[in-house]
Image (cartoon, rainbow, N blue to C red; front, side, top):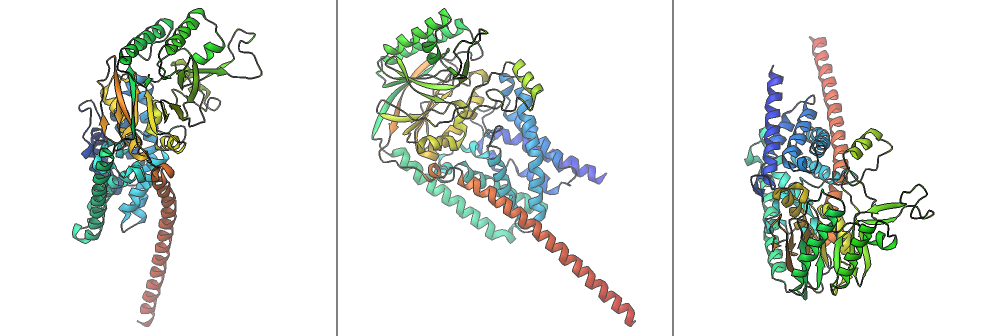
Length: 548
């Protein structure tokens, strides 16, 4: 009975953490979220982890992961009925594995296990951003997006240094509570953390004001067109209507003499390059011709999301004998000028399940279910393209891609002076959902000290300067345009993060392996010493009986 009561109390603490943490991020109550909550949100969960038995710890992790992402990613229900289940289930499995690992840190290290817990948790956060299932949403550091003095260290450590600052005090408090360690016995720990936090704050303040007040060598006037269309509708009538809205808004913006026009992800459909090379359907070909003529008369470069159709098998003709097209598609951005597609960027990190599923042969039933639910998949791009137009170089991470630090770093490594993110979050129907996406973009600007322009279908369209300040946020879910003055700085150089992306996270992963092995060895030595002690204690007892 006592064990059951403890299980219920631990489950209650876990649920408290899972419900408090989403409030730190943009949510249905607050579009900005209450970021300060992220510094206390995980304490109940850590206490539950330290107190829990090995028999139930996995269930507590399962509960936390499912409830947290169900509440935090509430907007996935609008995306698709399957998505609101798939994401929480996948995350709950990951947390089911994480909680025992965090408990092992507390069990293996009797002194300062809280430090090891924070390192293990950081390594976990990094691992979950790798591979097919990579999902950066929910990273604790994102909650600090509107605390500019705190987050400037991202130019060195990325979001990972901030994660450590967030996690350490919470693992510290949890360990102090569960092991009943008095704070007066941990003055040194508190002092060291306070010094590091204060240095981060002071240096961050200096960096923020430096980049905030830095004079740009030049600015580029860019017209961002927000056409706010229903992204789930398709067909010729919809494509034509969207094009008419985009072209109309663009002509209004052209009166302000922009040097470039940017539309959003997949703003224009059908594929320009395919239908210029292989005209087929009369209506579709006519629509592409209208686009080409519009671009020719624009007098400035047009950058837009546009699906790219290419020949799937080079050894076969475009139209196969069975009447099907020999075609495969990429989610792309095109630079259109002088009546031609000058250059193309193909999306490299596709959204799992909805844009990409590499395990079709291994999971045929799941594949059939996804296809039945109207999921369409793209091919994966391989090159971090840098465009050049209007006198500057820029790269265009597409939608979800600006949530990954390493991708933006690769663009800047390749010579990008600025980042222009083309997104389509209109399907969410939620400002909070769009804000959750935008808040991660803030870190890409700071990490690389490059301006980042977000040109979106329905929000959040804005400019983020190299200090991380969000400028000229356009009202979401309306059809409009805005002229952004994109600042370009001379001799900016590259940041440590740009040169060595995610180095702290990779170090934490290596440290986690070493610490785990070291912790196991300590326990083995401890057991060996205990056995030796018990053996000699028995010998002494036997000697006493003999002499008596």
